[in-house]
Image (cartoon, rainbow, N blue to C red; front, side, top):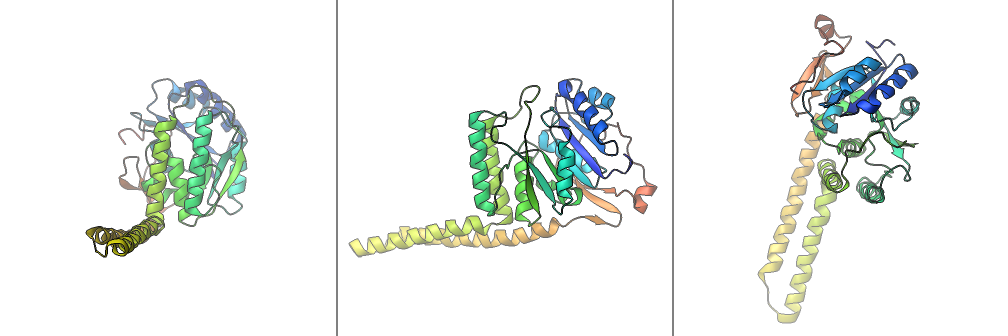
Amino acid sequence: MSKTNPEVTVVLPAYNEAMAIGTVVSALCAAYPGWEILVVDDGSRDATREMAMAAGARVVHHARNMGNGAAVKTGAGHARGRYLVFMDADGQHSTDLPGQLITVLKEGYDMVVGARAMDTHAGLARRWGNRALNYFASMMTDQAIPDLTSGVRAVRGAAFKRFLYLLPNGFSYPTTITMAFMRSGLAVTFHPIRARKRQGVSKIKFVRDGSRFLIIIMKIVTLYSPMRIFLPVSLAFFFTALGWYLHVYATSGRFTNMPVLLFTVSVVTFLIGLVSDQITTLHMSLSQIGVHDGHETLFDPAGKVGQRPVEGSRVAEEGRRPDSHDDIAQGV
């Protein structure tokens, strides 16, 4: 396929990656001549944009730094391929990795996540933090999750775009999209990968981003399986109230207000869970948004809903697509 109608788009979010981006893009262009290589320059202050364009990538530019998740959303919104591959732009991954992920994806999966080996170049604290997050997420989803935070993945574009409105602008986007796919019953698998030592300095801070990952996990589980959270909490309050009442009545023969309060909290928590479950059903319906009347629903990094013509439709043929190197994401 031609680059104007590619089967696969490789999306490379990049922020101040001038040191590595040219080499990465050149290698990908040489290995996959029929694919679209799309670099999202997230407001870099160095020559990232110029180096990527010179190497042959299509470049989308943010006027200011908005975060890795925002760059991913912009890339997904402007990608032309049916399948999307998301990779780091720092040269950590081998050139043949996108091909491997796409091969696995075509076996019938909706998402293939690159699961990093535990001895990959990362500090001890981050490795143990990732293990804790993986365990917590696996417990919540009842599925084995070997690498929750990997940003390397291949997805079916139509499925991925259903969840753009959920994705945060920061580095926790992999956590969100992985949990969202799993809780929605989409087919997700993990493909083992090894990463080279990155060029430059990592932009992830363990303590700051680790706490955000935990918050995101709770949000996603609450959104897709609220009773998994609210029912145990409700039962905990209920049995605490019952035990308190029996203990006080057995020892003093009196009835106090505390059991009443705890029973009330138990009932209210359970009702909140029921309401949340109804909201979940509504969200699941909204996530089915796809292509209608020749338009594809898009969500920009600011969370606003928009539409663009789908390539090949009558609407698209009558309209005009932006040039490959236009600053089509400025002001988003």
